[in-house]
Amino acid sequence: MPNSTTYDIIRGISQAASMCYDGAVDKEGEPIKVGLRREEGNPLIDKRVMDGFSVSFHGDSICVHYHSEMTMKDFHNIKDLEGELESTIAKVIKFLKKEYKKNIGSALTLTADKNFNARVEYISRVRCWVACRKYYKVSGLSDLARPLEPSKENGYSDQVKKWLQLGGLKGVK
Image (cartoon, rainbow, N blue to C red; front, side):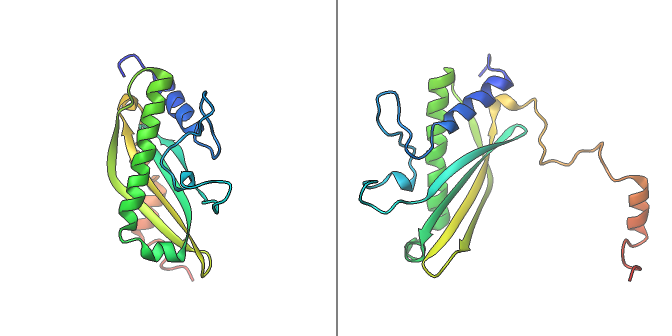
């Protein structure tokens, strides 16, 4: 991405992500396939699956958030839930790269971070909610500061440091 500006990269990723709502169609009228569970089966006669993804920007990185609702029976039948969720995020990334190249004309290079966070929440005895996120470093956004790293210039004030050295709230009742 030698000629892409920060604005072009962010706009391209946002455009690619905006094409993925449930029921989206391409220019020929065909449904857009990302690789999500809601795309499987016949939408007229099958029970609808609630899942989707979003993208957020964090300095020189993007975070892909994926969420889904599943039955407890499906949850207990899955042998490797984290592996399945990571493969779904990989499908989303593949789709974003393809749409980015189609919209902008240059390739999008993403480097996966090792951190992968997944959470399963109990809704009822029948259903549960699954949410996960994974960070990717965008190669063309290296000039932006990472908000995840602590800033050296915004440290604690001298008064707060002195208060912490004295023991903080230990003496307060």
